[in-house]
Length: 157
Image (cartoon, rainbow, N blue to C red; front, side, top):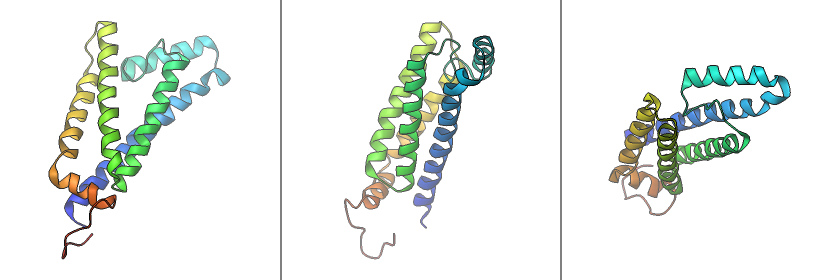
């Protein structure tokens, strides 16, 4: 397997693991009302928010915000699976999701009047992925992987 393809697949696996962890966390929070009291949930949410920061877990998280986070986690998971399979649309979906993620983190920080290191991580991750996925050789791998163009003769897939 060429080095470029291996790197792209590893990136896809990272996205799958990260999105999967977020999805499990958010779905776990959704079932809390069925197993904990309101006070226990509030204490747990406060502890999680202090540990992971207000961007990842908000103390005042409601069902609407939680459903949006679950949806985005599922979309990131789908994009990660498609990256591993070299689907061209996965790059475009990732660009949209990364932009929305940066906007969400920025909005949380602005509304809470804080600056949190998690925002720097989100921003750096988004810039790196955007830069990497727009490289000509990487774009070429996705075009070949999705069947849009045939590989040149003598080039193995």
